[in-house]
Image 1 (tube, chains in turn yellow, brown):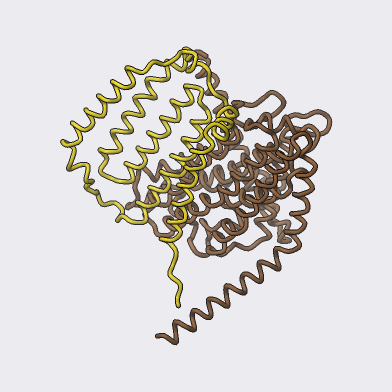
Image 2: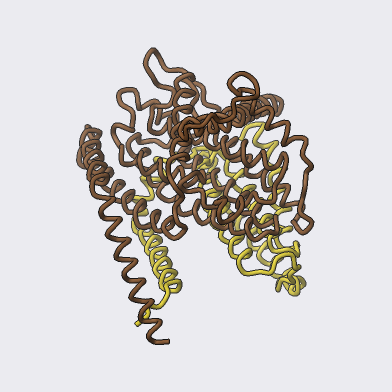
Amino acid sequence: MNEFSSAAFYPVAVMVLAAAVLVVSFKNLIYSALAMIACFAGVAALFVLLHAELLASAQILLYVGAISILILFAIMLTRNRGGEVKLFFHQQAWMAIPVVAIVGLILIIVIGSAHYNAADTAQNPGTKDLASMLFNQYAFPFELVSLVLLVAIVGAILLAKKEKIK
Amino acid sequence: MTVVTFIIHFVLIFILALGIMVLSALIFPFAMRRIWGFIGDRYGPNRVGPQGLLQPFADGLKLFIKEDITPSKANRVLFAMAPAITFITPMLTVMVIPFSPGFTIANLNVGLLYLVAVGSFSILGLLLAGWASHNKYSLLGGLRSVAQMVSYEIPLILNIIIIGMLVGSLSLDDVVGSQGKVWYIAVQPLAFLVFLIAGMAELNRTPFDLPEAESELVSGYMTEYGGLRFALFAAFIEWGEVAVWSMATSALFLGGWRGPFGGNAGWLVLKVLVMAFFVIWVYATFPRLQVDQLMAFAWKVLIPISLVNLGATGLFIILMPDNFLLPIAAFSWVSVVLLVALFPGLLRKALLRKRLRQMENFKLETTEA
């Protein structure tokens, strides 16, 4: 991390956290989805600051470009527009506090106790190394994941397909 | 990099990207109307200034002094935000384009991926524009554009991957750098063809301009926009995207800034103008696709072709790691010739079969009822 990256980290981190809070506090679902996009984009910016351009591009392509658009699409097709919606997590806000506290505690303990090798973080694996790792060392889990996706696609087509007239 | 140099770089890059948008908004809509006029054996706008050259300024002034209307039921914040989000997309894409030898704003090692990734912002903008307008035509236009762009993004990505495989790198600088001997349009005409078609669909250009099909949807997602905001959509964004897309296509398939007498940015500009002319030419020539045929064409024609091409390219690269360009070129050219020869007949048969099936189903339904 050079001077600029460390200076830029805090504003971006604050933006990500603020957007995350807005996702659950907006009453309009569309605004929530937009705040979520801001959150995802902020995470992509963090990846860029760490010189992980591949991860950043994948983050934007998948989360901003695919998942968020799908969510927006679903909201626009199913909800009455304009009406403020009471979300179920608005009713359970008090319950959320202990859960968040516990998860946060676990994360702090785990991340705090992990030992990062300085050489590992400095050495940024390029796209080529990542690809050869995926297709050699981790070929089996990689194929397994793609199988899961394939099953999901087949299932989605089955659900969406109109029944044929007999 | 200190914060000060960052700000200076940011401002310079911003001016360059904005300049490209403004220039394309000034040149292309006017060029389009004149070329349409030529193709349709009419004059086109030729009254304002010599040969009508001042027409874009007259149009701009007219749109500028119009009242800025926001529909009373529209969502004001999103209505204003949507054009801005869409406007960012081509400006962001400019970042990875190699303009001339040694001048790329950001030589990302994942440039090809970045090219596709930032395109998603424009989808977001169109969807929001359609929704925020509170108008059924706008919403339908927005939804159509999203469905179309998401579908056609897949063949686009697959063909970008093919180029990445030929180069062995995802950096656009390397893509242009490796085309010293031969442009990739000669090696992979099949990929170029599919990329061209899918690209026109991504740009929402005719014959894929269903999101703004004026005979069905008024103007689609931009129906409620007027004045300067309409100018943003109809001139700056649409044609800025055409310019940037032409730059990307040139870098991927046409050798980017390469050309005879030493490569420089002039060749890139020339290629962009040729590509833009092609877009306008197609615009004036082809009718619009039907909405059900549009999706079927992406999923049942373009994606299978791209997948086969991808597999074949990979196979040749593995089998002949030292000299794979020639067999790939042979495969690609043969497939293009076969496709051009056979596709119209096959398509006609498939459509006929579908029509027959529909008629049978209709008969069954009516007899049951």
